[in-house]
Length: 231
Image (cartoon, rainbow, N blue to C red; front, top):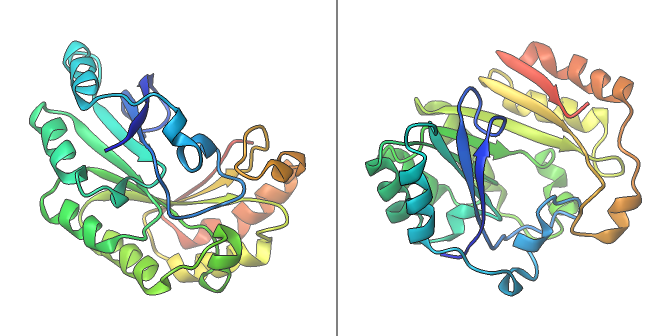
């Protein structure tokens, strides 16, 4: 498993918890606005962090950390992921998993073994626009299976969408809300152009606060918790 990043402490990535973040390289999407481009393309040039180094850090911070965020890239592409998470769980930490939902088979395994405590699944677009947004072929049935699996499980979770001008409109947000209606948590995330996979997206101007709030007003009645991040 290619661990290419370790943020030793975060107060914002695992809701209500003090955590660290482990970044695993490799992704099957090519979202042009991706905030972690080095984990999608060119990651072989980054130094690899050993699992042992991660475990040493966790052992040294056991009194202060509640959990571990496992992010990417797309962590579920790694067949070694369950064993890695088992080791983290054996140390007494909670685990939050970030995923794009393309591997429901792995997700089921993790849920069946109760290896994750919180799942954050990125919803890239309405289903009919997925391939346009992520710039690759997508098995939409797998996306739908992951959503339903998460919603029907007792695991804590959130769905989230990065609202990128030129890719998503308020009408698209409305379609997503109709699809996900009744879910526990849904977050609208402001697009940040400072670091992107496609360099041309660094020139894209994010939606104004008023435009993001318009999307929020469309979404808020459909979910138990709905918030806007990054404005």
